[in-house]
Image (tube, rainbow, N blue to C red; front, side, top):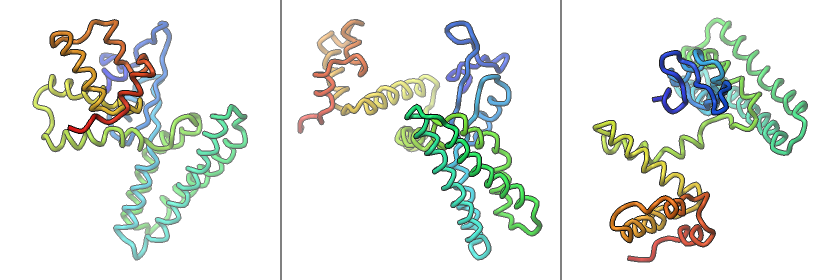
Length: 252
């Protein structure tokens, strides 16, 4: 599945060439799912950026597992991660404004350096509680993909926006006990792609789909021919259509 979506040759494990025939680079912002890690190790040009919200959760859970001894330890780590978000915010702001990144990169380097020093020191310390060891072990294992965010200020430190975007399809899939066939899964993916695209364009999904199905009805139950079909692509739709499709459907 990942190979097909990411354009990875399944035989070689490498990224397929770009449209111009040259090498491609692909950046994947994700959690620590082993498939992403494996692909990043095999494919030249594939960059893993791992999610700091996920690693933060490990420290929160460690503190919850042993609050008597790890409450302050957890808070120290949450403060370090909070500072890293602030440093990355400086990077993003400078990159967005087209400004030199030197000062923002220095702030990042100092902040990530403090995290690096703390993780190394604590992993070597005797008597560390087991929940804390597990959190630090995860941080160590995924360190390269977590620290690499420095070079990609245009990408957030976490993949929360992507996870929020797919939450409803995921919940629906769980409630329906998944898809029984590959074709059903592909159909669901197509539907959610269409509705997700409409929402990103600021459209009311029901109004938008109703307009499209009405057009199909006028075409004897078939999709409209291509010139008329392009009208329903949000990036090619007229301002009048976009305005109409953004409104909620009439009552009843």
